[in-house]
Length: 156
Image (cartoon, rainbow, N blue to C red; front, side):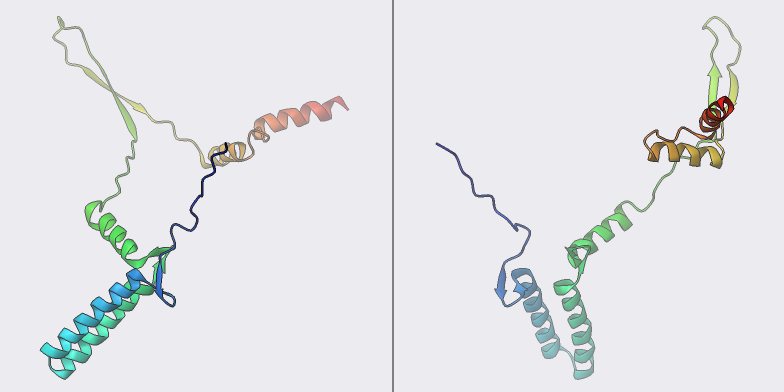
């Protein structure tokens, strides 16, 4: 007996309730309508027009705008999280390595601090290394390539 399973497809597609409008969009539009109604009842006409304009723009953005395929409210939450909760990117730029030589416990000499200089790789060497990595080792570097070329052409 074969066990056959139905695999659901399009699980990220939201349910449509009226034309192209999804449940999430409908709820956002209803909430915006309630805010506009309250502004109509509680404010004078000029303030009502201002609040209606701002509310309508926010409702349209939150209901219909997608950034990178995600709804705007997800983008806004991610933006707020990365801006306020994790505001700084910390990069460690280590120039020198501090090495201390420790004497034995019986000796009363202070530990000597030695500073080892970090070897700086020239940009030409870095570009050559990246080319070696990008080609998967087919390109072996200028020095090795020149030695192979000299060996091939010196035989002829």
